[in-house]
Amino acid sequence: MKIDVVSIFPEYLAGLQLSLIGKAVDQGVLDLNVHDLRDFTFDRHNTVDDSPYGGGAGMVMKAEPWALALEHILGGESLVGATSVERTVGADTGDEEPAAAGRPILIVPSPAGPVFNQRIAEELSDADHLVFACGRYEGIDQRVIDWSGEHFDLRPMSIGDYVLNGGEVASMVMIEAVSRLIPGVIGNPESLTEESHEDGLLEYPIYTKPASWRDRDVPEILLSGNHGAIARWRRDRRLERTAEVRPDLLAGLNGLDKHDRAVLERFESGDDSVKE
Ligand code: 6GU
Image (cartoon, rainbow, N blue to C red):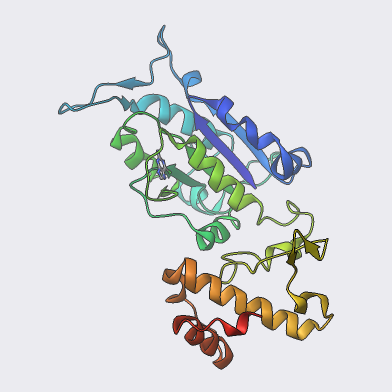
């Protein structure tokens, strides 16, 4: 997967060189490029912002540097100047790698977007090319956002109901959530199947040695070697934890069986006798 990020603070994204994402970049599983928006300005002060038409507080990011940066990224795919059909299906670029089928996805981090979640992370992890446009100040001139929709699959995206100073941290959140789902990024793919949100439930509690720590014992059943009983116990804890912490997630669940529903009913009636 190719990932391009445009920002006036490219250093912010340096953290992506660490850990599993950094390793995936080193190994060529991820082709990650961070671009400085100011490289696409041509005045003495490398101006990227100006005051808002109509008045109001703060500054607005100017359209032209964004258009030039995004065209530069599209140009890397040799799609600039391609026919609209070639743009849609992927241009034949001769000695370069064939361009990805379809348009690149342009993610514009914004608290005004729909909220990013694991389902969207999974969807994006299938893409060939993601581009993140990290706005600062009050945001980006709407005209270049509208223009970009002619060249990209445009996806405004929030990471939650609070306000950040810019899109950089939000982009890092989404890049980490998406890229860890790409085959080869996480060493043990099995660790992806039993984690929180994977199937709409939160994760069960986990323990390691010693079996007794400061008078607190690991739940007996985990030492039993009875794999069926352990799996049932873990699912029960996931159901209870989800009902307690995120009852909003229960509404979207399908695939609950009779036992699951009994666990939830017992939890809702306040009877936690099944826990031990
Ligand atoms: Cl994606 N950007 C900004 N600036 N603030 C946010 C956000 C994104 N998501 C939540 N708050």
